Image (cartoon, rainbow, N blue to C red; front, side, top):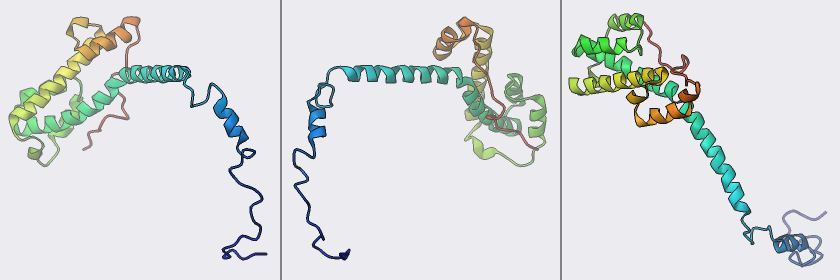
Length: 183
């Protein structure tokens, strides 16, 4: 048995590794018209399949968009409610609760929570703008579910045409995604 550390192999190679006999299968494949060397338009069908998959994923994302946005806006609504209740106007905080993004029991829990949240917003105007954005979003969700086409923004109009018009109402929220209000 030859040593592994010997520079000369025990048996020399039998023939040239690049001989035509060794690579004949590869040469025959490259001569075929469907090889990668010759483009005959079959790549277009493959690209079409990817486009169909992309469109299906986009439609699926549009269908489940509200639960994702609802979880995002609910987290902002909790911070915004705490800031508005402590440092702003209780009227705007109550408008947030009236939209349904926070339950009245959750608002009561947030009211009894100790501690401050003054660092969440630089000023009251920023908190009011955020609250207006959340309120506008919730009105858009209700308009989409009710089928009020005239009150929808452009994205929700597309969603209306794809789903609501055919009686397929997208979900508005998923409990497991929404941030919870703990005591």
